[in-house]
Image 1 (cartoon, one colour):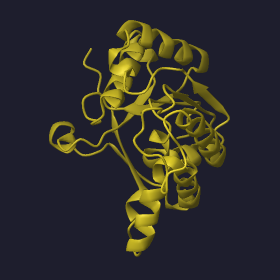
Image 2 (cartoon, one colour):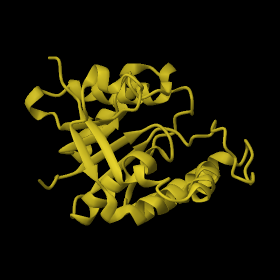
Image 3 (cartoon, rainbow, N blue to C red):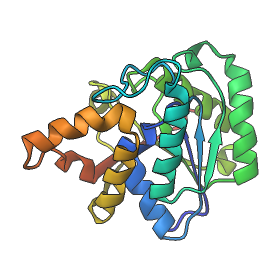
Image 4 (cartoon, rainbow, N blue to C red):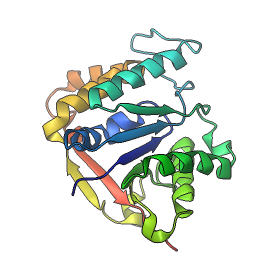
Length: 218
C-alpha cells in the first residue's frame, strides 16, 4: 500500500543511512513524500574520518553537509534540523521535545512514522528520540495515529518484542543505500574500507531492513 506521507525522526546524521535509507528510497520512488527530522548534528561523534580530516570544531558543519548529501542521494527534499545537542537528548524536557515533534506531525500529517523503538535501540539518544515520538503521537486519538515502524537492535529485541513485523528487501535500491552510507564519510569511511577488504558478502546484511510496528497499550 502506498503511504500518504512518511515522517522519519532520528537523533543523528547517518541514523537514516544504515537502517532505513533503502526503505525511504523505495517510498520516494513510489511517489511518497518523505520528511526527515534530525534532532542533532552528531557533533559528539567519535569518528573523524579514516584517515582523520575533521576535528571537534569542524565536525558539526561536516556532518551537516554529509547529511544533506545523503538526503540528496536518497531523494529526501524536506530535511528538518532541530538543533538539539548530541548525546544530551535524554536530558531534554520530555514534554517540550514531544511538543516539537508534534508540531511536525500536525504539519505533515504522515500515514507512517519511522523512529527508534524506545528501550531497544542501545544509544540513550536513540531511546529518548523514540520515546518523544511515541509521547507526541500518543496525544492523538487512537484512530488518528499513524502507523509507527521502529528500528531496534538491542540484543533482547526478538526475545521481548518477537520477530520483526516488517522485513523489507531493499536490494533493488542498494546502490542508493550504499551511496547514502558513503555520504557520511566522516563516520563510515573506515567501516566501508574494512568491508571492501573482507570482500564477498560483507555488506549483504544491508540489503534487508527490519521494523517492529509499535503496539499501543492504551
